[in-house]
Image (cartoon, rainbow, N blue to C red; front, side, top):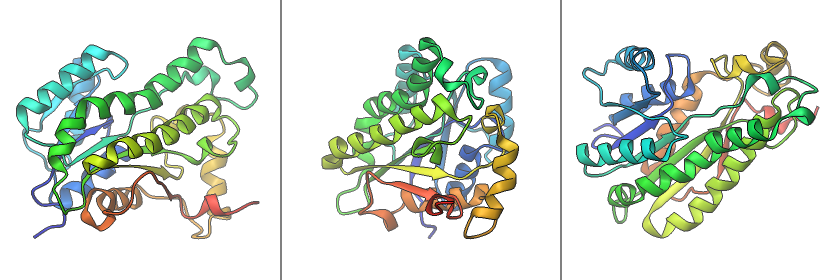
Length: 266
């Protein structure tokens, strides 16, 4: 029997086959889990997500459009999931947004109010909004005496230390990590665990918007204890651990999967 056999959950954030969400889905499916997926509204976004999911070997995937910045879209997506599945054993939040115009070294001080607020809204508040709607489903997925249901969100070290160019996205990730701790406290009595994976630099659509990414990609292998950049599979396998009973006593944590970069001072 596979580690996650019989478990079902929702993955939010697959845009293509180079995103962390895709690698998480790959690992969860390999461990026996059944995954449902949301995508941004629009036929082009649906085709792109469907193509990425089908590359995982999922035939006729459960897909539903959702703009997480809209309350009605969150209601519709989680309502539809509840019609299709009786429980949710895991929820993966892997979405973030910041206007790339303000993601460059020296631009943070000029960040407009709306750009600041939208980054925090989509990158951090949406985790709270999703947990509120998923709460009854997750509670049903938290088997008594088992490892509980698992919520996980994706962050980056720029939410803790200054990474020049990460700017308002770093502020949003800090809010995300703090939100996860408060959610872990409130939902823990229902057997729902909430954790954050702080993944290292990976070239994705999102990371390409940050100024100075080439320096990150080239510098990590020199600084990291493992002397390499993180790979998508590293994060995927960590997600399997968090979704399984192996992490039954782990909640409210930010787990670094960055080849050790966060441990190095210089």
